[in-house]
Each structure stands twice: as C-alpha cells, then as structure tokens.
Image (tube, protein in one colour):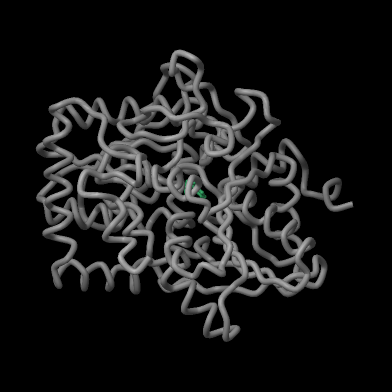
Length: 403
Ligand SMILES: *Cc1c(COP(=O)(O)O)cnc(C)c1O
C-alpha cells in the first residue's frame, strides 16, 4: 500500500485491467501532452505553492470535519461529516477544477471546455476560468438546464458560455460526447477539463490527485478530534471523484471500512437507476474500461437518479479495481432514502445537503443504527441550495418524510 499512488494507475493509465486509454489516434497525442505537462508541471515548487495559496485563500480550505450530535443521539452511532459543502462554490468539484485551471494556465491554454450534469462541475470550472482569466465553454443537456436553472445563471454570471445539448436523452452522457467533440476541433488552444475521475488516462489520475486533499485533511482532522480513525468512511459515487478524494486518505488503513454509495433511483429495473458498479458489466465508455450499464450490443443504457450529478452510466476505473479487490464495498441508496436523509440533515443538524451527498448520508444513518458503537465519516460533497426548489415543489418541506 505504501506505493499505492505510484503503482496505480500504471504508466499507461491502468488500475488493474480498468481504465487505460481507448481513444482515437489524434486524441492520444493530446492526452500524452496533458500527461507529460501534468508530471513536469505539477511537481514543481511553483505549481504546488500556487495551488496551496489558492486552496487556502480562494477556496477556504481546509474545510472542517463536523460531528453530528443530534443525529448521532437519534441513531446510535457517531456520525461525522467532511464539509466539502463549505468549499467555495458549494462542492468538492472546485478541488479538481482549480487544479485543472492552474495546469491550463501553465500549459498556455486559452479556453477550458467541459460538460456538466447537475451544473456543479460547470459552476466550479467557470469559477476557475474567471479566477485564471480563461474562456470557458460548458456543454449541458437540455433536461439538466431546465432542472438546474440557478446553476445555469451562475455559470453565465461567471462569464462562461452554456451550450445546450439536444441529442439523445439530453443529459450528462450526451454532454460528455459533445464536449469531447468540441475539444477535438481545437486541442492547441483549448483543454478539456473532465468533471470526475473518468475518461481516458490521465484524467482519472489527475482528478484523483487533485481531490486527495480531502482525504489527507479528513484523516488528520478526525485523528485530532477523536484520537482515532473512523470505523467507516462513506461517499456517494457518480463518476467517483469525491469518493476517491476521501477514500484515498484511508486506503492503507485496512481497519477502516470504505463504502461507496450509488444511486438506486426508482428501483433495480434498467433505466430506473445509475448504479453501474452494482449492476454494470465490463465495457468501454468515454475512453476507459469500466463497469457500464449497457445492453447486449454494448450501448450505454438510460440512467436515472433524483440527483442529476450521479446519473452517469459508468464509473471511475479506480473504483472498478477497488470493487474487485474488495477494499471498497459498493452499495446503493434510492430516491426515497436520499430524500429522507436530505430532510433529516436539514432539520436536525441545520445543514441542507446536495441530493448527491444525501445518498451517502442515507447510508451513514443506516450504518449508525446497525452499529451503535461505531463511527462513520461521510464526505458531504456539496450543499443543497441548488436542489431546494426542485425538492420543495415535488416533495414538500419534509413534514411527510419526518413523521
Ligand atoms: C457532481 C457531484 C457529485 C458526483 O460526482 P463524483 O465525481 O462522483 O464525486 C457528488 N456530489 C456533488 C455535490 C456533486 O456536485
């Protein structure tokens, strides 16, 4: 485990048999350039100290670890949150976006290109673009644009172009395709900034490395608060960046159980969920080998979750490896579990969580009830301001749920 981060991924981007780089020839060269730049630039003293300054003075890091006193009393165990919702711009995504933006600056790029699902990655990247003085094009499915209006407006205020994607199901998957195509048209002046630990090498590594700060901080803070490590750590998994961020701090602590929570949406039927690590099969998606929700012909299946940041038909390749070797257990929470946790954390702790993060909170509540002597640390990946209109319009303010 000592050399885990050197060993994985391999030089060609593999986590065991997962990941790699299944992309057209033209793209291979660009990915190699990004990879080389990453290795030469990100290890320099200048880059590291600039990123450290940004994290401290712009992002507001370190984010705190918080003990949920009321929920712990109600459920039995000890529930803690790593407060990534307090990151500037409201989610963990700024951790890798500032890293990607800084890399783009050092590489002399003029424009950042990306897709977004819930709008969180778009907002985080638009924030980075504004900070560094770079242009920013964000591709977003029309369905998500309608659901996430406040985030669309935020991106525009930050100076980004929000480009609606109208093909297919008009959500995250199609937005990834279109963003990639746009990037391929001008790879010299632009850089593609992926929103999670997915895509071809080097992105799963690069995004993980920029997210590692979450796990490093959380481990230290938890030790300082309690004198011990948590019994369990949990995070929601869409592509898997917030989960890799916090898990990476505890991978070598083999006594700490790790749980990745995928969205079960409306149920187990295909099209009703987005739990690719739980129900997917091996395949190639967006340039990587991963577990995919796919049909017999290898076509990605429609996915659904109440949390649009989680509705992606694949997962980061590192998660596939950690599932196979058993270091992380992957389980699910459905829309109802998610809403229940959303309302409870709001009302009993004064923290309105993102619907994505609520999946991990739901698991923590269950874990606490079943393990009254144990502690669990949740990566609270984002705040729920973006979700409140949607939730209240469709499900009310929680009185029904909290009975
Ligand atoms: C995007 C998002 C996620 C899902 O992305 P991962 O890469 O799986 O972390 C989770 N939580 C929030 C708040 C998000 O915005």
